Image (tube, helix red, strand yellow):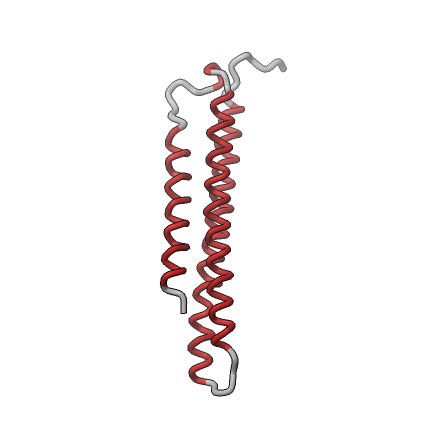
Length: 127
């Protein structure tokens, strides 16, 4: 079965790849948030249990969580830039006529910025 000159499947495959990176980045951000806030549990545990060294673990947990959040946000940002560069190389015949490619780029860029904002918030409120 021959493939036509105009094949929008290439564009849609690129969209699915971007959305897969978006899901992966969000998962890494969520994991980072949980790891960062686990430090609060360790801090409460240290208050209730004397002679423990959990306060230093709380700050390590917080910093590791922030690193995860930044990694997830940067993964989304890099995937967005790669997607934009790839879509720019496609001929107009491969792009669907009534479909805007900007929605996926805008969503990914916004989620990346929110992830970076979350990292800043966690950094400012760390124990």
